Image (tube, rainbow, N blue to C red):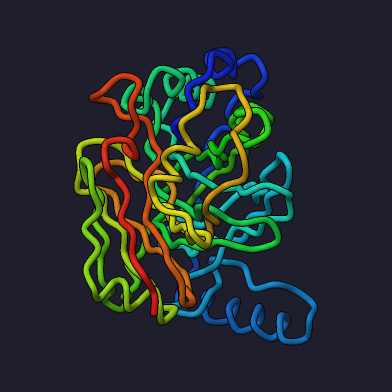
Amino acid sequence: MHDLLYSPYLAHADRHRRPARPVPSPPRRLRPAGRLAVASAAVLLAALGLAAVPAWAAAPHTTPTLTLTATDFRIATPAHVAAGPTRVRLVNRGSEGHQAALVRLRDGHTSGEFLGALATSFGASRPFGTFVGGPNAAAPGHASEATVTLRAGHYLAVCLIPSASDGTPHVMKGMLAEFDVGGTVHARPQRGAPTIETTEYHFRFPETARRALAGGRPVAVRNTGSQIHEVVVARLKRGRSVSDVVHWADHPLGTPATGPMPDDEIAGVTELAPGATARLHADLTKGRYALLCFLPDDAHAGSTHLHQGMAYPFTVR
């Protein structure tokens, strides 16, 4: 779980990381007629199975999909991505649960600087980069999706989930990728969605949002707190409770978990900076669930948001 993130290994991550790639110049903007011609040609080629439609050639008001692939322990990303609202899909081809936490590095800073600060605390990382959300808790053989707004800049995609077998965060096993976002964010109208709010130390989870998740409709996630938060959607196993999840997650860094997980983590939104918003996509079947935040607590040394009460059990009937 993410409360095990802090590791002495993170402080030395810069030794194993390549220097950050420079941000390329945004592609030249096409005139309206040019955009229409390119989009039409791309759609035709895609229909013939000859090419995929690039994200920047998507039809108006269509949110492009960025597909990332996770294995044990790598994240595959494209080198360049267009700016704007983007539906990020993480396909997990590994044997462990994975996430793609997206971080926009601040200008002039590197992944090593960001990870070195993150080794101290989540709060300490904020001068070096901003968590913008991403797909969380993709189970092995499954996918997780979240919609985020990408601004031009240099990004990281990282998995901060530790392995249950040894307690080592996946990022320390090489699960880090870097990519560039170019272009201008153009507002695309989106349908209104009920909102889950995160703060210290609880979730605001209205009935409208619960019904939306049960019906496979998107839900907005907004961090209204002063710390960084995440949302993990977990299905509780038969006879298990949130307290069992708290107990299972409470083991020292670098040590294996005791026994099997009491829950199946199946969806969510990765770390969001204060004030940030993303959209969660899930389609929940009948069962007992919980919203969870496992992040370390910047205000209480040695504690986590989960231990401070950041869990919300609910039932889908």
